[in-house]
Length: 385
Image (cartoon, rainbow, N blue to C red; front, side, top):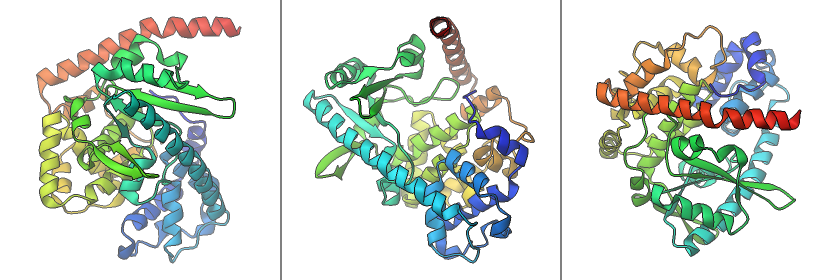
């Protein structure tokens, strides 16, 4: 399980039902302003804890969504102090993402100069495509994908401009099983980080069958007069669903990824929806797609589309109310989480051969982590003692 944020215990103790409902109402208003979802949870604003709303929005990376929803004009006033906090968050996001865009332009230049095929994942470039705004969610690093065959060459190219592999990601577990490495460049003023990927998804969840396909289907977006390679619209939807599944396994809040699922799905016509279903099946991600879509429906409201109709069957034993809280408030002690192997079974389409392959890969990854990472951690602890 991923390391929990220090706010988890406080939010768990507080319960925060009103604050969770408030954030959900803001998100629904953001995506459906014409629907008039303006009661913001039905709770008088002064009764809502600003600190708890701020933590819920921050952990889910949806603070800017909440800010924009409030700007639409609602019948419920914002709790005193919340707009100021949200505006400060937005300013920090602008600063962080502007630096990320600058780093992306420099990375693009060096990788293109070495003729390395790559594509940007997530981050400010995707946010602009989905929302028309580069600054919806904070991006502290640049994510790029290369083919497994091009991984070493891309790493060498980044080293040539000052990036070095972070110590924690040098292990076999990171390179082989996670399929990524963190690379950091520190010029004394600030540190810039690149997540260099040749795989997508952690062991324990189904991975795409054809990584190179993400490179073949890429599109170009213009940034500061430069054409930058970004994953296709259908792959944005798939990658967002992969992120939801990863967060679900790690029991992390993921409303920000769920918003990306809805924004990406909303851009598709019915014919394109059928294509993305076929595409997900080819990648072995049909049920991962449906998990992301169902999460979007329970958080943001159903859309009565082909995609939503298909999504109702995934993890059907989990009630909508529970799935909603697993997405936005996974710290709640009242949640009865399904066993991870049961979720993997469903995401593998209940196919025994595929399930055994994915479960075996996850077991191998766990063994590798125990062998290669624990000694390094012990040595580091001894060195600091």
